[in-house]
Length: 181
Image (cartoon, rainbow, N blue to C red; front, side, top):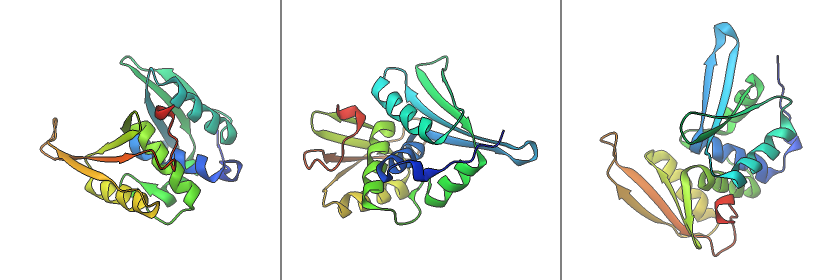
């Protein structure tokens, strides 16, 4: 069944959040010959407030999506939409933002990254990535808000690639990720 997506039903911040969450903990599976265009977003089972935020956003733009717990501690949102994938990939890829988006969308983008690949302790947040292009993209967006960040390197555990932790304060009240609540 074809699922067209109208992103105009979302606020700019909600769109940005969905984009950021996809970059952090999402994947796409395409099998054109079979007509399969699948998107999955992964959360930790205990992150109920993050799941609720994603659920509310997806309900606005999709008729059908599945939610389920995998065998580990992962909770998954899954849906099929070629239209969604085409629109998503015009704006982001796993390296971050591919084009300029609104300030509210950038705010949502960072919040989505925090809720997917970050953690918050008190008023300090870190987004973890092994992708140097994504690290640079995050730095650029934070700089546009006047937010100074601290970059720390760490050795890769499963691969030889080093990773990065982009840390910054949430005291400026630019961002309000679910993990901060």
